[in-house]
Image (cartoon, rainbow, N blue to C red; front, side, top):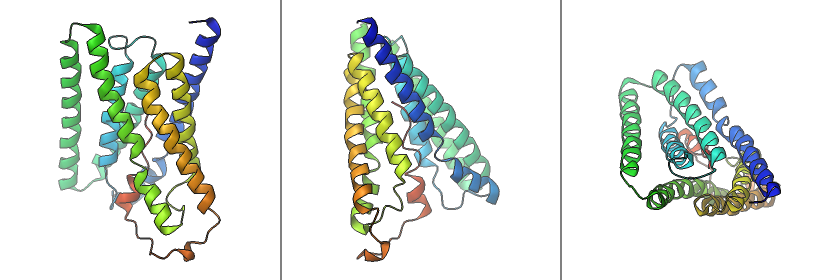
Length: 242
């Protein structure tokens, strides 16, 4: 790879890390509310469980034991995993006893599953086969993460309101995905550029919908906008890393 391509690849990776950091911080207002009220109320902790598993799998893919020259993939998902651990710790502390035990059980299950993936992949002697195995898992996790806002997209179309699709969250998702799309292309890594290519397309769809519906009054909607706190909280952590 030419020096200029390496520099461009690293710049794209750094940019992706920066945009992802903004996404990782997006649930902070929710957790400020939880701490202030001393209760998780109707918020769901499951999105953070899923985001943690996503970050851990993709982090593992970014290590030198699995893929080459993917430091930026490693760092962004290490940061993302740290954020999810913090969010889950706060959620468990303030949750009701039954929900506390359930969330702790999910956390243990995620760590156990990740441990199985790590140990299992290390049993694959052929490095190329190991790369493909973990790469498929990582890509599947990323694609499902990028597809999760489709609920919000359908909600925007149905209600003609962008109330639950914040502009800066959609913009950050697009910028992060497009940065890692470029990073993956320059690194010739199909397991990076394919899922982030899909994420870029979905990000564009969200931005187009935002600009199309932002000027429309919520009163024009034919259907009432009824969204529980649980559904809204499921939107917030979608960014975890690539």
